Length: 157
Image (cartoon, rainbow, N blue to C red; front, side, top):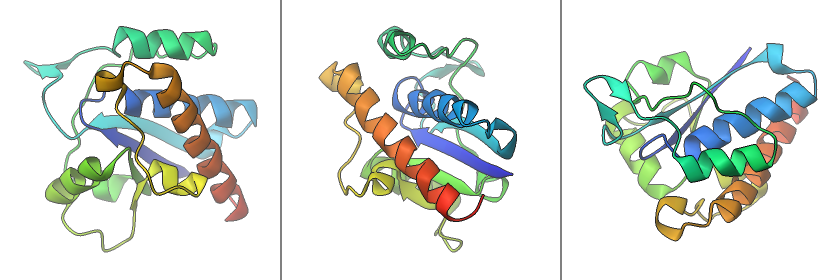
């Protein structure tokens, strides 16, 4: 089983979009049983008294436009233990990677990657919290997740 944790700043936009896009992709290829897919935040900004906020409404609406549900998802924060729990820790941008290293330490097992690496790109998934372009974020994330799945299939999962 491949265990993937998608990570962004608040776990209300990009990382939950990646979590549910990837879940949709593996389900459509009848591979869901081979994966554990989740998402988390590097910050606590969207977590109050131990309870995380739900997926941000425009992100949820963009997923719904593509017939993908994210019902029941609430923000959670990464923990140091996640480094050992997951096979891949996928950040959305350089800041996420920097903050992941602050929590996990150095990446001795080479588990930390930016999502768009799997699409052959070096840029970041732009944060739609600021741009308001959830459609562009969706397309970037879909491209990254599709590339990630193709990469994993080529590795023989």
